[in-house]
Length: 215
Length: 209
Ligand code: FES
Image 1 (cartoon, each protein chain N blue to C red):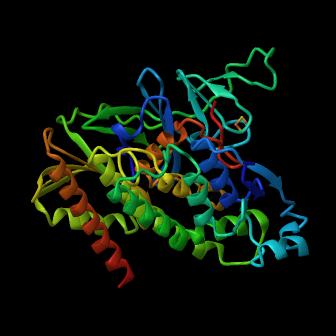
Image 2 (cartoon, rainbow over the protein chains, first blue to last red; image 1 turned 120 degrees about the vertical axis):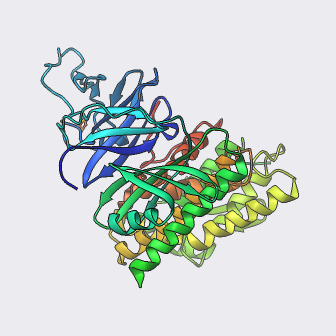
C-alpha cells in the first residue's frame, strides 16, 4: 500500500483507560494507549532515551512512562520527567513521534505513515465490537476472501459485508507481508449467540486463509 | 504444623507459579532458595536424592515430596481452607482440570523457549516460540469467547487455579521474543489476574505500582 491512509489498529473496547498495547502496521511499530480520562493516543513505539518499546511501559493519568528508566511523556509526546534527575528541568525537545488518530465505528484509527496528513476520517455508523483476529496470510488473499461474501465492499481499510450472522464492518490492518489483523464489529444489539457465531465465522476464515498458504 | 517447604529458584517460572498460587490463596510457604544458575545446586547429590529428575520446584510437606509442578500447585491450593482457587462446583472443577492439563502438556514449549533465550541452553528457539504462539492463540480464542459470554476467567466467572497456572506463559512470552500484539483478550485477562488480592510478580513480569 502506498500514500497516506487511515488504518485501524484496535477495537476501541480493547484499549481500556490507563492501558497501552503494542501493534505493528505496515511494518511500523506503534503503541496505542488510552489515558485515564479516556482519550486514545497513537505513537511510535520507541522511547527516545534508549529505544525501549513504550508499549511495555505504563500509563499514569495523562502521561505514559517508559518501563526501562521511567521517563514520562505527556499527551503531546513531550518528555516531562526523568526520574534519575528529579531536579532537572526537562528540555521540551525530547519527544516521541505521534500519529494522527481518531475513534469511530468501535475502532481506533491512525493516519499512516508517520507524519502523514490524512485529512478527516468520515464518521462510521455506530457498531459493537466483536473481536480482533490476526491471520498469517497475505493482505490480498484475505481481502479476496472478504470480497467473496455477500454485498462486500472494501473502501480504504474498511470492509463491509453481509454475513449469515448480520452485517459486519471489518477494519483491515496490514501488519507485514504475510500477516493481517481484522478488527470485526457488527450492528448494535447483536445477541451473545450472534457474537459467538461471528467469532466462529472469523476463525473459519482464518483457518481457510492459513490453509491456502500451507498448500 | 510447620509451613510446607518450597525449594525455589526465583527466575524459574514453575517456582513462580508455586509462590503465586500460595500468595493468592493465603497459604504460607517456607522458601529455600536453590542456586540453580550458575551453581547447578539442583543437580547436587543432596538434591538428586530428593528429586532424581533434577528439576525445581520441589515441595516438601509433612510426609510428601512433590516434584511435578501441577501436583505442587494443586497441593498448595488444597491447603487453603476457603479453597478459593479450587471451587467445589464439578463443572468448574472439570474445566480447571482441562486447562491444567493444557498447561502441562502444551505450554512446555513456552518454558523451553524462555530457558533457551535467557540461559543459552541448546534448542530450536524459533520453532519453540512459534509453537508457543499457536498455543497462546488457542488461549486467546477461548478468552475472546469467555469475554463475550461475560466470563472473565478461563474456567468461569472467577479466578481459579487454571488462570494462575496459565498466566506466566503469557506474561513471560516477551522473554523469548513473542509480543502480545495478537492477543488483546489475553492482555485484558492478564490485567484482571494482576488485580487478584495477594498477586505477586517475578523478574520479567513488571510491577506497575
Ligand atoms: S529507554 Fe525509555 S527511559 Fe530509558
